[in-house]
Length: 455
Ligand code: NAD
Image 1 (spheres, rainbow, N blue to C red):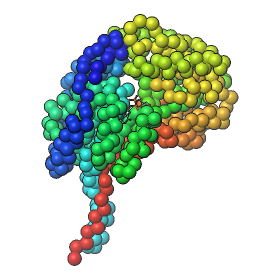
Image 2 (spheres, rainbow, N blue to C red; image 1 turned 30 degrees about the vertical axis):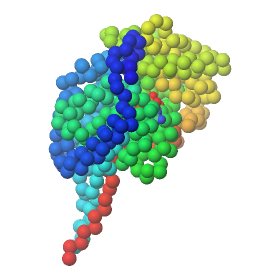
Image 3 (spheres, rainbow, N blue to C red; image 1 turned 180 degrees about the vertical axis):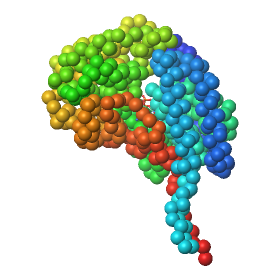
Image 4 (tube, helix red, strand yellow; image 1 turned 45 degrees about the horizontal axis):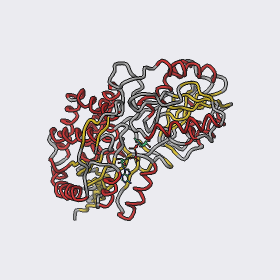
């Protein structure tokens, strides 16, 4: 398997993919090791993960360089991602004892009722490439803390990072056999679905997630899916600082080249502030430095997957054929690397591909609306339900709008953010189950009720 730098199109490494035999062997190893890992006790597991957290700090520059080389995101964004992952790990470490230890629910007379949280066993984590540290730690850190062994399949576009994570966990003191990396693409994923894991935790596209859910259904084990989105954002007519809102929301749409599951993918703007918003928004987009992700100050680097260039071009073509107007960008950038101009389309309608299909790239459609009712209707017209954002000076107005949107996350005057203390979950085609928060810690456990009566 060749690893290609998307910014230079150079092969930067060649790795050996796993096959049926090697995966079987890793699976058996995990099964044997899991019981001892669970017996080690939570304080010891916390100690090892804390060491891993510290290693992320000391190795940050090297890890960021590897990440940028394989996914094409600007170096500063790679550093930010690792720091963000550390923040999440810190929250998990601070809260593991509270949410993973047994709880005494009732003690009356000679009766005690207790809930304990047992590990699932050996879990399979099939992951995505866009934020390999962030989406990875959402799963494997709480899984390990809870006493599970983990088969981690990084995306084929983030394999080097997957191997670095494995190396650091082992350096941190994780027993060799408790965390194994499965290398490869779809075929490797399919082989993992054949094995009898005690839980499947997937981050990726709706298409793959839907397939995995069906494939593992008969195993009767937990299957969590964190999938894509077509996240809407509404700018109401009462916002005061239009320039700041335009700049902040542009960042929400284009950070990491729009390759975020919670990137702003559709913008609706009240007609009273529309012209001014558009003018500040395009000014912001035109100000960004485009170039090699290793260059200082670059905001738009390479996109990770070559295939996505055609998807983006088709969305632009479909929009323009149906009456949209291009205010910036619109095409692939010539030369080496998978680069696409940051693209702003207006006069769009909800029937267009750019307003319905997940773009997962540097492209946004912006639409004028006459009032909140129209905005709510348009925001709701989607098969996805990951996040939704509203910008207004009025908290009641935001609450009223967001409560009518069927999404796992609602943002008032912010967007494109994830926080460890609250659940991260998708509705409809955006997923099933939750990571992060206490729910995300317990997602890797099975609760057991103890009814204890002393005679
Ligand atoms: P993908 O579905 O193409 O691949 C995800 C993983 O599944 C990869 O490791 C891949 O090798 C594996 N895979 C592919 N086919 C498989 C099969 N048949 N059986 C088993 N495994 C298989 O997604 P991607 O391109 O890596 O990631 C982008 C998608 O992920 C976007 O839709 C994005 O919105 C979503 N995403 C969601 C979240 C979230 O938290 N909701 C976070 C990050 C990314």
